[in-house]
Image 1 (tube, rainbow over the protein chains, first blue to last red):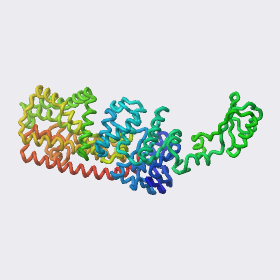
Image 2 (image 1 turned 120 degrees about the horizontal axis):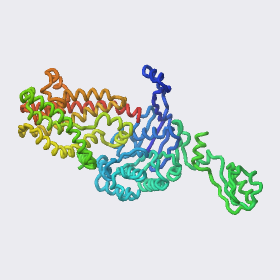
Image 3 (image 1 turned 90 degrees about the vertical axis):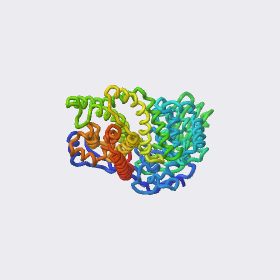
Image 4 (image 1 turned 180 degrees about the vertical axis):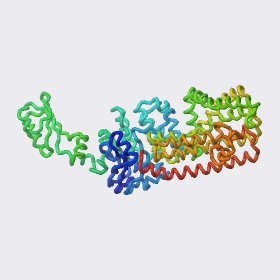
Length: 318
Length: 267
């Protein structure tokens, strides 16, 4: 296993006080704090080369977990091993084999072209010059960065900067990638580009990836397996397909029919647009509804599971 | 070049490139930096003249020499301030540094050392103008020149290490300006920055001997602009080495505890 997490728990003590001057004065003398459980008894493991989506709403404990896995935070209790290392010891051999990309944080030198920051990474990670040039050129080509790496980073657009950041984070060819919202704030085209790159990188290098994202398209495109977390606890760990099957009881049937009479009785009528109707039905009744629709002169028909976003919402609600 | 020397060379190069991006800002910065010693110089020159040519045995020409060397030493003393630590933690920059397989202090030491290359280049014309305007008295031996070249880097290391250790208080609280201010005030008075140490009352001069500030300002300045004996020159270097050792040990100790705190609380 590349990542093994067992009974991981992390709590934070946060100051708490009411609003207003009186509460401010009181807090000078007596400070009240509350213990917040950010991660609670989390256990999972990830095999080499696996791409796992780590999903959950804001404040679910995703980033805290990633920080513990990358050695930035000490676990409160429980054990973590990444590539056989205890991350919180931050051994150099461990740090040379992982990377953490945070979509909202910059690692590149703001005033210099990305190429100069890459040189710095070469020195920091002690990458032999020929390997460095080969990997850098491959990444720049895969991400279609071209001459953007020669411009000062401050002059790049958000998307260009993110791509340049990803190159910088992968120059040392890490085996394990922790990606925290790598496509946050990017337009759809740029999101697709980065998704395609990550898929290609994973297949070329067999890297292990743990990805958090609020964009379900990222997860669907990259992850066969997802871990769903809420309020610090794991709610689901398994394949994305099984998640849909387990938590979504309904399917959407869209059909073009000649005769619309009596359709409402077949299920929940979502919309009618000319001769095109959309129905929502319980999964176990799908076959029967399709059979019934045949009697209405069907010329076109599709059956769809609900969007992953809806399924995830269902998981949190359950 | 590989290993730490390779890292230092690369980061220093990046620092030089970064500073050259802002040439006008650099000159404005240097001019601002010169304003402070020129004020001291004008005041002390006037006092010296009114007292028949010298104050406490220091002539106007010696004051000029002192404050012209001061400008270079002051620039060698520019290091990462404790205030930058607050930003570093709040913006998550420290997290990025912790993910790298090298101690963050190496990055700071190398970056600010690279900056000095630009500063020295900018300092030369400013020193020439000040020399023409104030006519300093210099009598520099080869030994003094060599000791000075070592001492300014000793001063740089001492101040870097002490302010790094001070900055790490930010691991516990970000409201520590008062503590920094105490440090900077003590430094201003007891380092030779505000006034040459020879002009301080005996008790203050004695106190300065036991504190690190003198070895970051007064000592390197006097190596070039004063008249220290060979013994005093070499003793000063030895005491700089002691303070570097103390600073390194302090950084290591505070870092060990602070990083556990950061790991417990995060950013």
